[in-house]
Image (cartoon, rainbow, N blue to C red; front, side):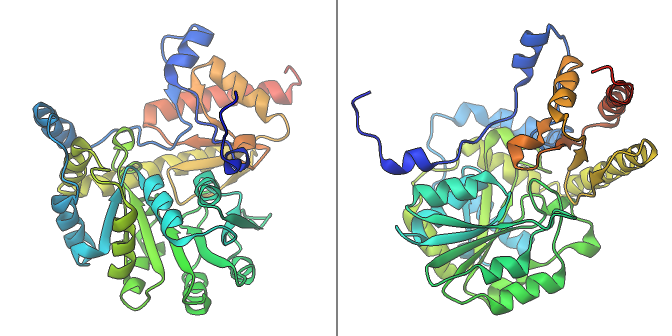
Length: 371
């Protein structure tokens, strides 16, 4: 191709999406396939969401509300902040892109954990910046908050912390967050990605939004893609000081969140009891996994999310392939920067039981040296 491509494109990390259900059905000749790779809510959204957005389909000839007024009002009530402290995006990914576009220039950097959600690095590079990577602690795969703070230099403009972390599912302590918030220079924006916040046990939640009233340099990100079950509609949001939100609104494109996504999010917020039901169900399923894995002496990382990292060793590709043959899509650890593991999304009880039965068969084969 003779068309000139911007130099930064060659530096962008490649995001490898999870395999699709239809792809696996076709490849292996299967009638039923379960996607347990992308951390969606396999219970689906609240039934009222589906019912009510169906009635709004006849209005899709109109542009959406560019300022998502109704959604901002609902989120304002939920979080106890003014509507002008909220911005929404086409998924939290877009809010991350807005942050990088607004606060990073060529030659500046962002501090991130390694590994972490790949989108941080992608948008930092797209904005002309670079990343400083701080490895997770090797023993528990937690973020090294002290190390990340220590990596900050005069060119740092952003630091990304994920609570709970993706892809490990681990959290940080209240003391660690307090230390970070108190010692981070005010010129650096602390981006707290809480995509899995609703899955965290209530007693272990860090109330990061409370810090925003006294700190100008913190933005908390949340999404409707996980526990709310709206991943296919792409809608997320950020909460920060009004001045930060004003800047993000200036770089945000008009009509960036479609009308069906806005409606679905509003209805989901009107049925918040569903969130706790899902959290409780997922917690029960994780406990079943922990007990099963302990019994067969397979390692794993305890998670504050709706997924678990399972340690399958150097032959993880074999495990992934055998699971695919049986109709279970999981995420290879190699794709996440954690080789030797697979990441498994918690599904409904019946699907989970089937998965564990199949996993047991694969585990026995490996022990018997039949692979």
